[in-house]
Image (cartoon, rainbow, N blue to C red):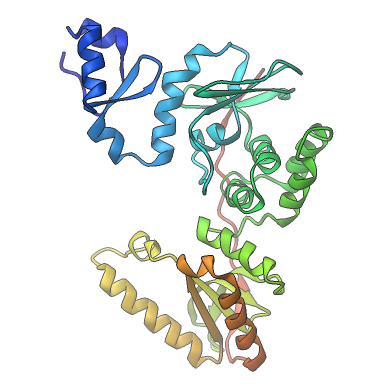
Length: 327
């Protein structure tokens, strides 16, 4: 049977297909095969086309068989497997947690944490992993604030992780390193952030000392006609929009081109301004210069008048349910 170039190939499989160890080494040395774990390879072309998260999934598949049966995926590895977004988070090692109090270690491709896990774990694609609330707290203890907010916001939105769930995990982690930082993250989380950029925008606005904006507001004309949804709003007067560009492709209607979507977005913004709203828009690049965005928001707040339209809170989506098993 011919090998699928998009699949991981283990050494024993390669030997079974007629390759010798010398050939495997040559393919790796020439850069045709990329080693992703001990005795596990991907074609170089396949590897280069993968995202960091996809590469981490292959790293998990090549590594997790070597850990003990009582270990479950945790931290960023659990986040990757259940589809939570990460930003500037190291993915060079698989993270697992063993349900015991001592014996953690760090190896080249795996970090083993030791801590009580609780009564239940999630099961995704055959992998056992910490529940979303536990994953959020583990990352909130170990990642910088902004990175932790990105994954935490997504978990609250996607899986319906509640404040009670998070507080329970904080209580379990009461004596662990980083728990004070985790409490700060938990206080800041919002299930209304729809993207990494929106989570980072919240951190940016907060760090600049601006009032906390509401999110995902539905804007209506005085007669009740819906104009659209906005990412942020300050007291229903100043509207903030994170322009990640990718959303124009993601939200295309049938038969609509990206150019059509950009034109429709401009018409929507013109309608918002016509209703008397101040609109401030920022991009990925602007997130690296938060002071400039903050000043634009402050100027918009200063010149704002009462608009003719109104903004109402959009509901959260239905929570996604994971398969759960008892330990």
